[in-house]
Image (cartoon, rainbow, N blue to C red; front, top):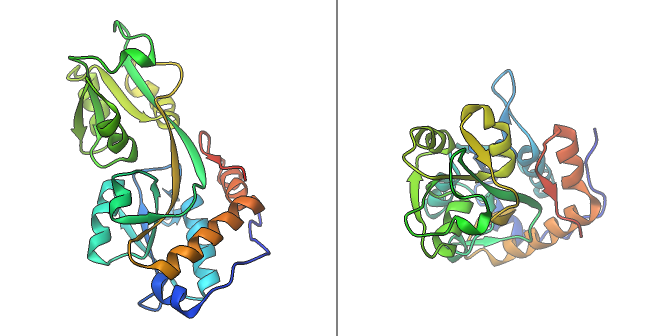
Length: 249
């Protein structure tokens, strides 16, 4: 399936230097979010994130190097080390202190799973004193909950699998996650039930370390064009990703 774009934003030499200072595009790739990035049978990366980074490298006319991380928090933390140029991350106010984000490209619902015998039956009941919520440290929705919750406590885990583990051990009352991932994993917590609705809409965009103004401006126009052309929607359809929705512009 072809997913290329036609109209392209102008690329200045300064923008190219900002986005490919080493002569190649170093893309921070997060294996923790399978809605964007997966490995095929041969171990090669594929998915929406790969399509986007390949398109950006093509526009910059530079080779693509994928810098791989297991979790989104690791990608964000590594931004200060200058080891990647562009990454796809959830747009979040804490990260925005050190990263600049493009416009949103996608939408994903954040959801909750509770135990079958839980007295919590609605989203608004989760933020209560004594309630413990499992969420991977550094995930976009964990950072959101850290700012949004007034009463409930977050139990930060290593990753989503660790969240499931402590939920099944009944060390927490609630399991937070990307709703598509929760739905796919329901067989892993047979005594859990998914609450209706969502606690947030998670938007992802292209992130760069702050201070690259020309590169940031180029990415603003690049993502705007991708949104208008339907590039992201076609990539999602190509990889048959459920629960990930392209932003409509």
